[in-house]
Length: 89
Length: 150
Image: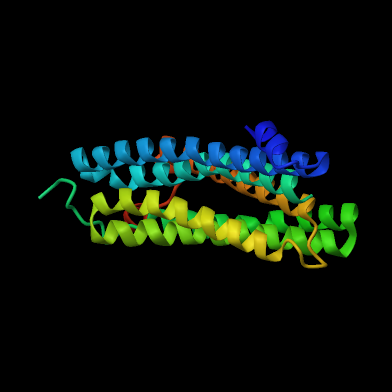
């Protein structure tokens, strides 16, 4: 797609590479944020179900849920760091 | 009544874990700041300090949102977790994009500090939580103390 746009608008090589960098950096961050979002949704959904079924275990469930959410979020943070390093470093 | 409309006012395990993570970050931060200083000088140290601050703030905000959600209802926890995830990721992105052009910001130590602090603190905390969940007797409770006095 980028190569077609580059030919149509007569974009130079440097601009073309910069465009590709921006596209793939954004794609890396977007995809890395998508996976944890699915994981967190599933994890918290299961935790809510567990708390509703067994309220006396809510403390333990919330503890492990919080840690699970934080671990899943680490993947998004890694994606974000890759994004800033690819795009700006 | 039990179910998804149940409120959890008394216990705040997320807040307890977040406070514990902050306490542990006091031990990790000097090492990371020293690493930043060795590799990138004063700017590296400052960037590493900002990275630790972002991660600690992220944990505290996450815990605050989940605790607040649990006080309303357990169903609200799901909303807070998902909305909070997007919100916190957005805040981190905006903060880093705002400071990235400042003269004293080095992106490489900042980025690596974000990852190392987040994963390091979590792994450290998980060891403690796993031990106390698997062996609840390791964690002293007020009830046990009362029993021992009697």
